[in-house]
Length: 300
Image (cartoon, rainbow, N blue to C red; front, side, top):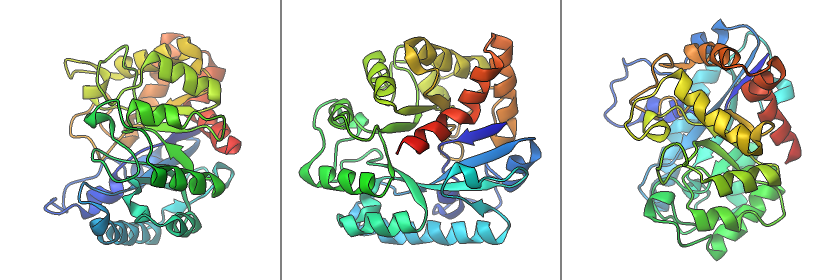
């Protein structure tokens, strides 16, 4: 079985100022190689809320951390056909397109380093778009549209997680469909980071993808969640037409609370077993586990 997780902040966790280096990460090579099948983990080059002028410093720290992981046996891939069973296969992504420093040529540079997905923003306006936490209005800026066009030319997925509603709809222009690497359903938890039913239907219709986030604050309004609550969001999305468009987007190493039973990347097989217990057929389980994400990347 192919198992893909489309978002984790492990690289940032390795270099975050003030973090105790002795603390374990949610995603480790041992966790990724412990289960049977082919495991693929997307690792984000996260740009924190310090503006474009600070992005080169943070980006280089995380790239250095990635080289450290490669030296320890993690295996970088750029397409899922390259993934190997028993290896910690890693797909590089970006969270916060401040990393482009306002220069479209930097999109090409990062694509050349193997980056396959880019979230346009995190939680601060950045000259490209408006984040969801700032409200629904204010779509892509002219510079944001330039960057999106260059990303599409480089076959780099445009990630709408953290993007607001107007920006989301700007991307549904009949061109290459966007994706949400780590988002949940707003109908089940009314949080600005989550996608409405209309957004989900249109994203699925366009050929996009959603990796369901494991953060309890996005899964339940009381902040409590377990494996079944994660599956609730997946089931809801499937009811909206997402059977071929839904997968895992844990947000491991970017969250400080976890669903009961999903404490780290080693627990993902519990989620797969939970899907089976819920009555998801094996073909659908395999799609959600990884084949849907593979099909999405093949559409870019």
